[in-house]
Length: 114
Image 1 (cartoon, rainbow, N blue to C red):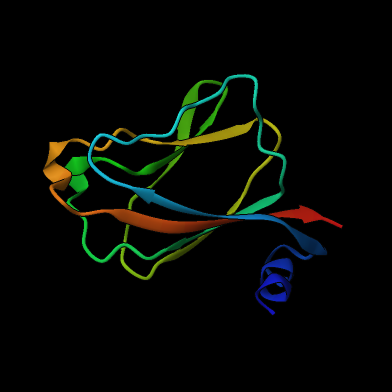
Image 2: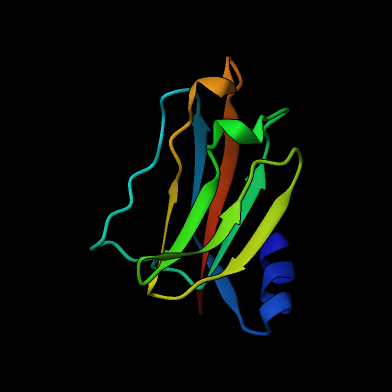
């Protein structure tokens, strides 16, 4: 059902390629791999984080040609839908000590065109 909604937003047929659950806390980060490119057309991020200090970083950063094009901060109960291409890469910024004991929980859904 959600896949049909996402397909309707971009007016092409999509199918779910992968779904991943993440949990990040102080000291965690995601790596940006220069050789790995997004192999999807649409990425959906469903945020389950209860509270977050933006100064702790931990945001999702989307990069094209070495430049950040989009930054998604953890916001409680938010759903972010992003159209991406093969030149788009993403990572989670290092979470510093200001996160305290808070953890960032989110699900990433990757959709590809049928």
